[in-house]
Image (cartoon, rainbow, N blue to C red; front, side, top):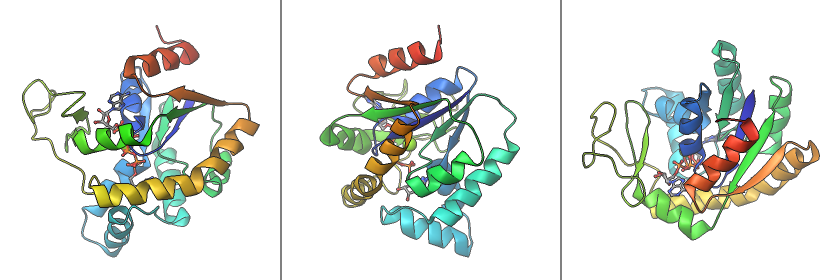
Length: 207
Ligand code: AP5
Ligand code: MG
């Protein structure tokens, strides 16, 4: 089963993908892959970093090639795609690679998403996602699983967040219409995390 998560920055894509990981899904996050690349020492890393810090999408050619390469190495039949595709161009590319069963769009208020992003902390080792307001780790600022010191993402500052939302607004509606036409699209209100999980459980028949 292939599940795709759409939603604005901070809408909960990574959080839900991590939940599905506990139910035997492989988590493919284009953002996580780019963050790995951007910390390397190469020209490609510079290019990716420039876009991420400016809150802009990385080029479709680079993104599509990276995702295609990653998909080729995945053995798990259950897959959750988080943050890819981001526009119709990428969605059309993906059609040629894989059949999607469900598209869940996590929708909520922008101010709420921004507060969540500003409070987010992540584990640099296992990518677990925490929040200083909504999901505190057991030991302050340390990952529950590997005790690593939690970090803030480089693009989680107010200036870049604004640009990420602009970029999202530019490309999202045509993408939603693309998946609505395929009748695999489900919008889920993201105000309450347990509600989102209950909805996903219902569609995917997770008990
Ligand atoms: P990406 O990493 O995909 O970032 P994003 O889309 O901005 O989304 P976020 O990761 O910020 O939010 P999320 O929806 O995962 O929320 P989370 O679960 O963490 O992309 C980063 C950059 O990479 C892009 O700007 C672009 O440059 C590049 N890129 C990536 N993909 C690309 C592509 N396909 N093409 C081109 N460029 C690409 O939750 C946020 C916080 O809220 C957490 O702290 C969490 O604990 C909390 N939380 C979540 N849900 C709830 C809830 N319901 N209630 C309370 N708290 C909640
Ligand atoms: Mg994310």
